[in-house]
Length: 142
Ligand SMILES: [Zn+2]
Image 1: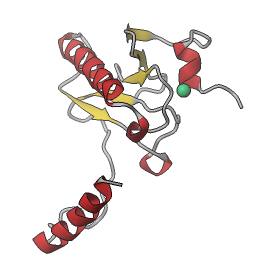
Image 2: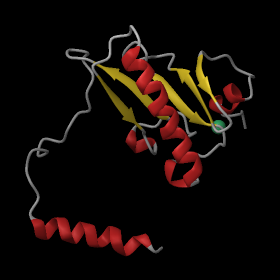
Image 3: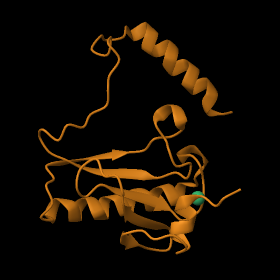
């Protein structure tokens, strides 16, 4: 099986434009940016999904995202807001199956957004919310 692209980058076997690196994570520029300055925060330990990562690694990912996010706001790149986006699983839009957090600079008219279902604006009844919350709570100990 060919090595995961992000593991190759972390091992220095594939090129990438690095912005930041520490013991736990590497932050690289996305080669197909949604907006200029779009970065990926990649944990050094290979895990496919956020839900498979250990808590320290998750903390390191978000801590690095905060660092580069602050830098982005102070930089000369266009950035009025930031989306921190993690696609967990193919159905959620994940394309590289090594967990990573997108840091996407945003500004008015940048053309990016997620498509919402047609009934998105409809508020769910409290009873239905409680029923769904109950299903999640019941699964928490599993
Ligand atoms: Zn990997």
